[in-house]
Image (cartoon, rainbow, N blue to C red; front, side, top):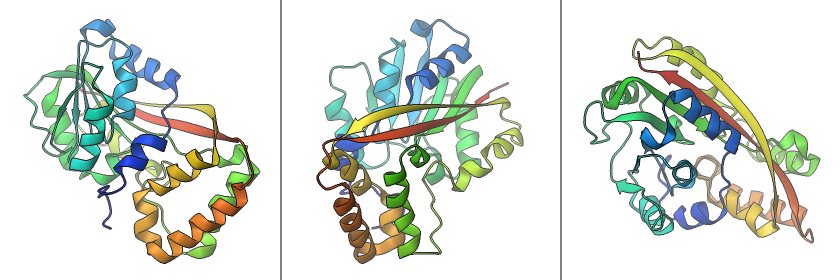
Length: 255
C-alpha cells in the first residue's frame, strides 16, 4: 500500500467514514456571499463523496466531484445517483475544469495528499473573483471519550516515531493558516471548527479505522493488524460507542 492510494479501502471508506459538522458547511456556504441556489461548487479529492453529498443537500446550482482514484470515484458515483453531483477524474493539481468556472472549491480530508503550491495555482485559476477555497478535516476528538483516547494512544506504543499525515490534527493543519496567508492567490483566511457526536457500533468504529491509509502505510500490515486486534478487544461487548468528531476548516477568498 502506498501513501494516498485508497485502492482496496474505498468500500470501508464509503460505508464507515463519518460526515462533517453541518454548522461548518452552513458557515462556509454563507461566507461565499451568494444565494446558495446560484453557487457552482467543485469538491476536489472528493473520495467517495461524503462531503460532496453534504453540499448537495443545500441545493447548490451545480457540484462537480473530482477524484483521481478509480475505486473511490466508483463508490462516489454509486452513492450519489440520486443527486446532481457530476463525477470526473482529476486531481488537485489538474482538475480539468475551465477557468473561472466555480464559486467554491473544497478539499475534505484530502489537501494533505496534494502538492500545495500547484493546488493553490489550480484553485485560483478555476475560481471566479471573490470565490472561496475551503480545506477541512474531521478527526476524532478523543479527549471526549477516555476509551477512544486509550485506543489511539496504543498507536504510539506500537510505533513511537509515528508522524501522522492525515489525522486532521497534525501534519499540514499545524501550519495551514500561515501557508494560506502567505499565498498571493488568496486573502482573508478564516478558521472554523465545530464538534458533533455519533453513536457508533463496534463494527462502524473499527470499519472507520480499516479505511485509514496513512496509518496502514506507516505501521505496515503486521503492526496495523495488532492495532486492530487491540481496538477490537477494547470495544468488544459494547452496543454503542459515543464518538465525537472535530470538524476543522480553513477558508480563503480569491481576491
